[in-house]
Amino acid sequence: MTSLRFQDITGRYGNLRIAVLGDFCLDRYLEIDPARSETSIETGLPVHNVINVRSQPGGAGTIVNNLAALGIGTIWPVGLAGEDGEGYELERALAATPGARLDHFIRTGERRTFTYCKPLIIEPGKTPRELSRLDQKNWIPTPPALSERLSSALRSVADNADALILLSQVDEPETGVLTAAVLETARQLAAARPQMVIVADSRRGLSGFPPVIYKMNAAELAALTATNAAACPASELGQIIQSASRLARQNGRPVFVTLSERGIVGASPDGQTEHIPARTMHGEIDIVGAGDAVTANLTAALASGATLPEALVLAEVSASVVIRQLGTTGSASIAQLRDALTTYVA
Image 1 (cartoon, rainbow, N blue to C red):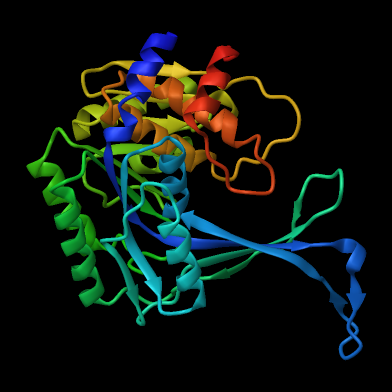
Image 2: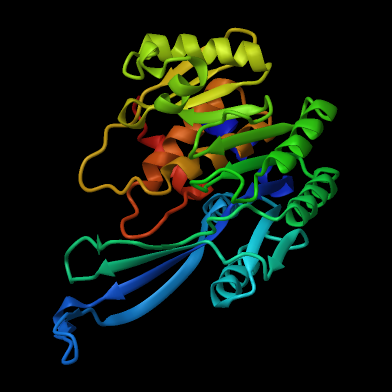
């Protein structure tokens, strides 16, 4: 990608309006100083003394963070938070995010705020080390009335958005934002606006999602495109490219498949396929958040008129920037992407 083309694509980001519909959570980091460790007099158990607490939007909020880092002009988070302390922290963090507008973000007493609590051992001169995580999730179905409120918010925001991202982060179906009813609304929207950039990603796979732009990993592709996932080996690059191409033709939308250290594959409905190898990395890395950086950069690039190969390069480079950020769920700015591109060797 030339510097002129990079400037042309990213120069449009400030005018983009992107909605992010999905499962927002609070990433709360508890920084622990092991030098201040104690033993509880009452229980005899170790005491970890927390010297700093920091919180930031996670889940779909990580995508919002990445869009903000890219300088997207308007970002609409569409999701839920509880009427609890974690919900207050999450809403406050989203409100402080450049470009974010909370017109369609719902606070409700019917759900707890989805929270990842991450204890980190912080020692001078050492990489932060994460202990066992404490998660707070909703395990019962999202009430139908909340699904209708979310569908209404989606219909409203879609009238003004240039692009839409769908992200499912929950473990149990129907317990998050992207219920079957909300996905049906997204399906209707995709049919009514076939030229709109709509990108979907889900940790449980994209079965049941409308035919929009799919972003997934190789195992998710295998599970989605083969009755027996073992019949579609996730290790074979040629098979992955063929499966992605078939799915793109079937859906009439591009398909993107992340391959970790092997890079990323893209396929378009017209039969075009591209594989961008991963950049060679040295030193310690942290892959948390890399997938969300890819989703955000693919969406922004495609909404700005990038070609399939251009979008793939920007997505892959963004991941190479994010995995260098240790002890946090990172993001990649335009300046960081520009710097990384100058030394990028596929």
